[in-house]
Amino acid sequence: MPGRTSAFYALWPIGLATALSLTGDATLYAVLPTHPADAGIVLGSVGLILSINRFIRLATNAPAGWLYDRLADRRLLFLGALSLGVLSTAVYALSAGLLPLLLGRLLWGLAWSGIWVGGNAIVLQMAPARARGHWVGIYQLWFFLGSALGTFLGGVLTDAVGYRQALWIGASLSAAGLLAVVLAPSRQLYDNHDSLALRAGSASRRVSTTGRAAISPALWAVALAQGVNRLLVAGVLAATLGLVVQQSLGTGLHWGDWQIGAASVTGGLLTARTLVSLVGAPVAGTLSDRLSRHWELLTISLLLGALGMGLLAVPGGLALLAGTIAGAAAGGSIQALTTTLAGSLSAGRTQGQNLGLLYTAGDLGSAVGPLAAYALLPITGLPAIYLGCALLMLAVAGCTVIMSKATDSKLG
Image (cartoon, rainbow, N blue to C red):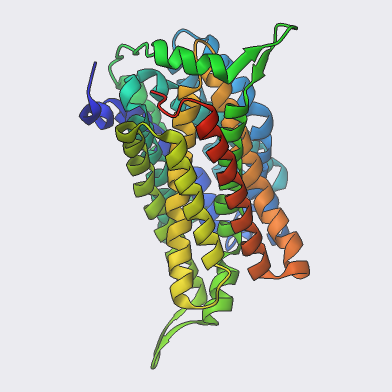
């Protein structure tokens, strides 16, 4: 069984394919608000285009997990999802008008369910039981890297060669990731359903008198943490950070005649947020393995997230920077730790289903977050929204404290 140092080498085809599959999606987020005419849509339709893929995943994550639990060779379904992702980016490049672009986004939502649920399921199956957090953290690193590079490359390529050409390049990069998985030598998948995993899994789903698997309170708590994390970090924070910058810094940063505009500051903070999350995920995963305290580390991450959200309610540049960094570190850590816990709370053929539940909660949060924030904004104001976010994080941290006492905190 390979040690911790082999994780990056073992996971690189799956990680690279996942990262490159994000290129088309990230390009749309970077350029569609400023190039709606190139896509044949009006500016008012941009929000719908950028959010519809998240809503479709509420219906597709669970079936994807169910299928991954029942396929002997999970890589086949993963390859199919990657192929669908390439197709969706090609549809973006070909689309001229709202309906074709909506179709491409629906295809991407279906593809991402297969890629993300399946990729994590494969990683959890490959990972040695005592290094599960480390392996999950490495895979999450690929996700954040793909998101950051995809947004950057999408913007640069659009300026250099044009909107549609940039998307065709994105489709080609996604296809290269697919090819990496096809050409990678098959490796033996490790059966880590040892006594610890089986014991944890028996607590994750109890069979009811009707024969249906019931989700345990522990797994609901993990899904709640993931859902709230995505609601606040990927939803509220990502959607309103520009407004926070505007309230804290006005038109931007000024030094004499030299200045950085608010939009540039926002872009820089969003990029820094992704990079901090990129580091936070593998660090949290590795620590969870070494300390065997998954619940406690999740609680600490939630408290850090509450601190970050609270700081963003305070005016001033220092609070803005500290709050963004704390929120990003918490976001990456929570994502890695909840995935690790979902794997530890799974046994037999429930791993994919549990991951489907976990990421459905996350997609629901990230889809609802911007809508809720902008609905509350004229009623409560921005500082009150962020104080409410901090209180919500604290409440979820309380739930994880209860779970850490009610369950075995030394899950493998």
